Image (cartoon, rainbow, N blue to C red; front, side, top):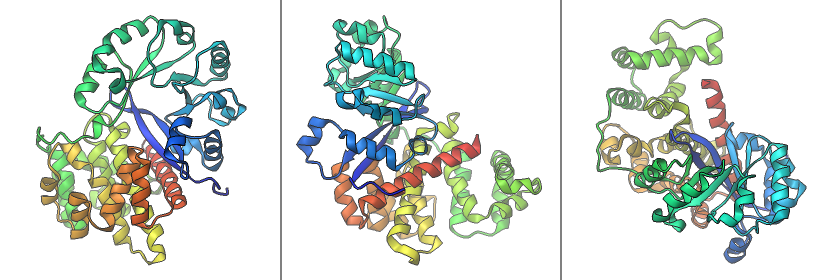
Length: 414
């Protein structure tokens, strides 16, 4: 399918439930050449950008089976263009400047009957809006703008209606806890990706075993050494056998021995599996762990960008290094341990270490790019794109491939 003529940025912000598992993403589009002031007044994107975006990639791939939250202004709300969106998987967010009059309420009823979910974006509670509260599924409250002190009363008032509450701009674990205690069902913001380095949680035995395996795989250890590490960690061994038997190659014959499993899977696959398992094995959230999602997409996106940039000249080693930087860049958050300490347990090359510790070098710049994209800081993305020598079309294509790849892993594990 031809790529969009109108260039745009795509942002994807996770929305978590009360178990801190990802249930959806807010998709943000921004036309690349739109002046900031105009962009603000049209809030997020013109209808044409959204329709182009929908035409140019599969929403289902970007969402990976989760809900997609999309901002709509009045023109888009009333247009038939909305019917391009996947019904049953889309939450339409009515932007705060929409006047909630009878026409809007009626249109919301129609859309709800079609199977769409509806949300009020950055909403300030007002009893005068009680009619719309009866046809809306979710009310999003910007906790920074509203202020924490006002939240208990707002939550109490909205409880009279059958709406769910989503706290937006949750930046700290403390804010998450307050909203959680008030009964909010959904949470958006980067509280889960903030390093809490002061706690210095001891890396548990399975985490240490995985870091040891990662180090062995990075240093080209022998199959004997790798097998020995698995033997010392029965939990890891069980997961390895399960993985190998669930992948297509397992159909030929069931794998019985660890050595057979390691050889069948191959060192590159094994390395990736260990990198992702650091997150998935860390707690019960497993594949819906938001840090696993960020890390997997970071790694894959960096790998694709590096390959695009280098053309055919790139070796597996450089691609692996890019993937590894993306994955490892969140281990300090996962283990609540300073990055320098984690790196001291791994024998990484200088390029990888510099990228992780100081965001230096080509890999460091690419890591910065992926981090800015995550928080939808599109102005910063623009600057870093130039430094990385990546075009906007390349970035969008790489994002879609990374999201798609991540979704395919999830479905493999289900």
